[in-house]
Image 1 (cartoon, one colour):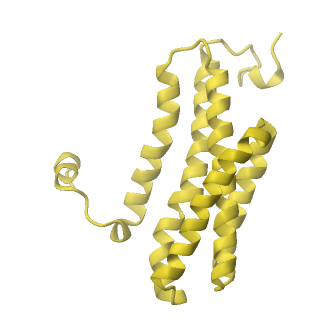
Image 2 (cartoon, one colour; image 1 turned 90 degrees about the horizontal axis):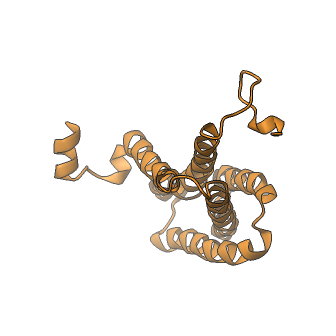
Length: 180
C-alpha cells in the first residue's frame, strides 16, 4: 500500500521507476533554491549595494564573512536539526533574510541577516542531500549526481543570462561553443 503522496496524477499507483525521478526533482529544486537564493542572489546585488547604499569594500566583506560563518554553524547544527521538517522553514527563512536586505542600510543588520541566511542554506544543503541519498538508496547512482550538479549549473546559467554585466564576459571557449 502506498501513501497518497506516492500516487500518480491519474489516481493510480506510482510506479517504482517514477519515484526516483520525483526524489531527484524535489531534491534538485530544494538545492537550487538554497543555492540560488542563499548564495547567488546576493552576488549580483552586491554592486548595486555598493552604488546605491554607499557600501564600502570592508562593509561588503562583513556580510559575506557572516554568511560563511553561517554555513559553518548551519553544518554543525545540522547534526541536531537535520530533519525533513526543518527544510521548508529553512527555505522560508532564507527568502525572508534576502527580502529584508534592502529594508536597512545598517551593516550590522546586513551581517546578521547573512549569518542567518548562511545557517538556513547549510541546513537546506544537508537536509536535501540527505533526503535524496536516503530516497535513492538502491537506485541508479547517476540520479544522485544529476540532482546535485543540475541545480548549480541551472543557477549559474540563469544568473549569467539575467546579470551578464555583473559577472563579466564569458570565457572565449564558452563564447565559441555557445555562439554568443
